[in-house]
Image 1: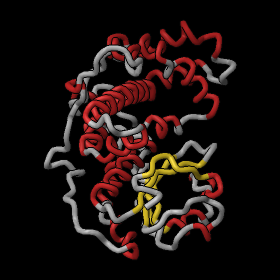
Image 2: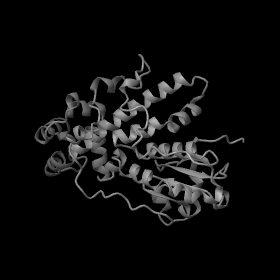
Image 3: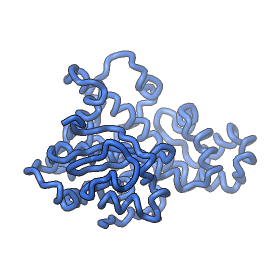
Image 4: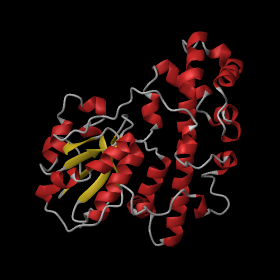
Length: 315
């Protein structure tokens, strides 16, 4: 099974100064409270990019149809895009660095919207000493409940939190830009229903370019991007994003035929390929669902459900 080596996560998380070098848009703190509220007009000029630049890794030329038997080799041609998506920052991946008790602490005292406003006023992350003082003032009484020692809190403030806060703010920005993208598509394509709008957004080259510019994508964005790319470039394929209930992970299935239900391996056509760009994996779907690590990875066939379908299931 083709398997892309996972990106190297052993290096320290870059500090927030990275934003300037990547030309990532500065955080508009006032936008956080209003994004997604549905009020006011949506302006496309807030988007970092509108279309994929010609030198983008995602600017792949459309080609003629491939037979279903060639699906795996077809998907393998998108190895550079899958690698690129796997290399992007990801809030969900970043949180996997921490113990369960630390995750609960971070969600309550760092990643909450009010906490981000306090720890990064005006979009500028506080220096480590000030981060530590702010957390001591607001979360001090809760440290014992989360099994976090003062020494561990100081280590977090000094080493991990600047990078985590930067990723969390970019994650909020990405959510905002996606809502802008969706609203603009709705104006351009008012005849589409909700499912059609989602498909149109993910097939638009601007969506891929947005992730590239933000250098951030969780499993949902990774799978939506690859599904949109495959569906656009290879309309002969049936492409869909899927998720397994309770596993909080999304990936892609593609093939000549996709099942109407997920019961056992016999429901999967042998030619169906899975693509999990967030984990840097792709290969025959039957092999993935019978892999010893399938449950850990969220490849749980009986629990699968479709999220977005990029074809007409009645055709």
